[in-house]
Image 1 (tube, rainbow, N blue to C red):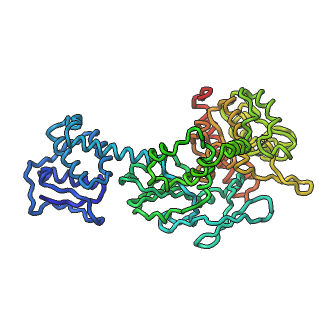
Image 2: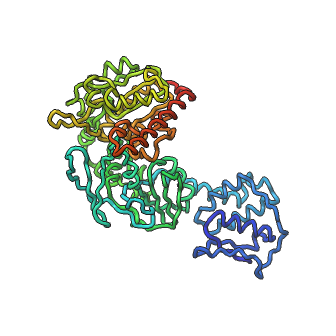
Image 3: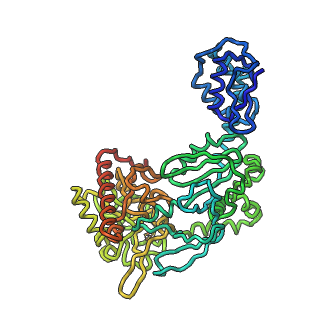
Length: 533
Ligand code: URA
Ligand code: SF4
């Protein structure tokens, strides 16, 4: 019998199998095994163990076989390569073999496939990402990730403009603007580049290459890595590319961090005592997985604490800032406009002069979303009437767009500022304020049902495209979001007004003009989204 050692890889098996068929090896002449070390692929078949069958130079493979074989190939069963070769060999004589589920080889093949499928489902459900900071621009897996182990708010100058967090890491102190809502600047690409999410997971089978595309699709704008003992994979959201590397020990994933708290509070917020059944949970979710789920540490507490605690939890959840209770069920512009002044969805209404609703064509095909009203907008009650609005008007004019045909609004409806003598200095809204105000924006989108939404700056982009959106990286693309099917993000006009020098101002203005032209043209071509779609 001829023994061939394979890298544990489906393509390596296919190559070996093709050569073996070509040389006339029958299944009983061969033993295909995983190589114990990499690069021991032994494909030279001219040894003393000679084939006893007829050469098959042009082997038949069906799509159905390859699909099933792809799953079976990542199973840990050491005999899977032999099984696959046996089935492939028999398929040459019996083309319908796969349909005979009572055949011992086929039933074994289907058993391996279904176990791998189940493992994949579990992995999709149980992987938990944790946030770490990369050294900017370092290759993702070449160094130990830097774990955020301490976050200390420090004051900066001017004191109220930025919240800078000082992070103590094994590599020294890193200062990060962790309130990455600097919507009118161009630096959030750098901030986002530093964010990296890591998960450690131990699947039953070698399923990482099969599982990775699911995460790439689900978390396409995050930079993430999944580490398993067999292999690791990283997703580059800029290049939209998966990179595989050798496996890593569990310690390479950060142990504790702020995302764990998020998961815990998520779990607490969805906790329903009436539904809690620990035995059922244990059987659904083998204990082996529990270690990956930070929310599990909440379970004993949740189980034993009284109903009062649960009620308190629900109340505090309801008390979280949100405009939702103030948004009327009927989403028409006059109804929304009438309801907006009573909003107390966050604290911003306390100091502003008035709320600023969106204005423009009620059936506009293009909707522009800015950040929040500025000083002039707050006084006049209309969006984009100050300096940023004037610049926007000049771009409308340059592109031949009639502003009255467009709907213009903001992600946050009240002006946020700090008083400095007579001056009211604009302040960036926090992510929590953007989120609190989002129900108004969604209601306006529902009322107007534009074909395309153009987000001006990072705040609007983060509202509709998610917290890790990188403006300099992702502007000028037609993107899909949970809230609208065609969203384009671009530079905020205030970023142009505040540009460092003439040259960078011109470059930013070109971005804004080109992105607006793209959004406008797309809005002319595409089909209006039906109501409640
Ligand atoms: N900046 C904005 O984002 N919106 C306005 O309405 C004015 C300035
Ligand atoms: Fe309501 Fe938005 Fe104003 Fe906050 S900013 S009070 S959520 S309208």
